[in-house]
Image (cartoon, rainbow, N blue to C red; front, side):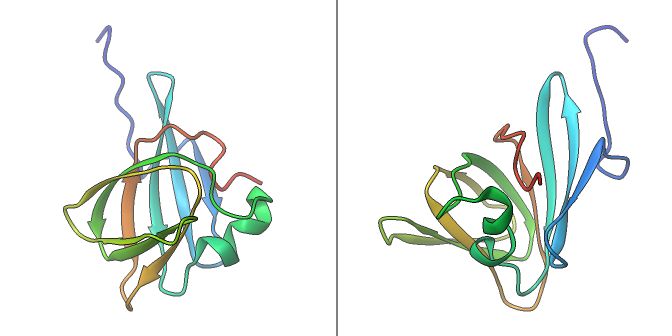
Amino acid sequence: MAGVTIKNVGSPDEVRAFAGHGRAHVVNVGGHPVIYGTFEPGWRWSEHLKPIANTDSCQATHLLYCISGRMAVRMDDGSEAELGPGDVAAIEPGHDAWVVGDEPCIAVDFGGYAQYAKA
């Protein structure tokens, strides 16, 4: 069908590991990367992705839809927020994030940051 591209996160174009605490399934749809992230309990950006990004805080822009679990976000200015199932969040560059609780956080990121968690 012309003009329609459908991909499934179960068959991603690429998988990126989060240092043993989850992974990102990346599908490229219509020239845009979409990341289906599974963030395991204990995952924290500043511990598991900072060494890959080589920045003091996450400099990606995210547009997330949280499917399950919970994630906290602390901006560089000290403000904090927490998202959970059904929440949609826009997160600007300059933040840390971590899984809250004992359940994996599963989220879809439509932010389009193609280099996220890429070594």
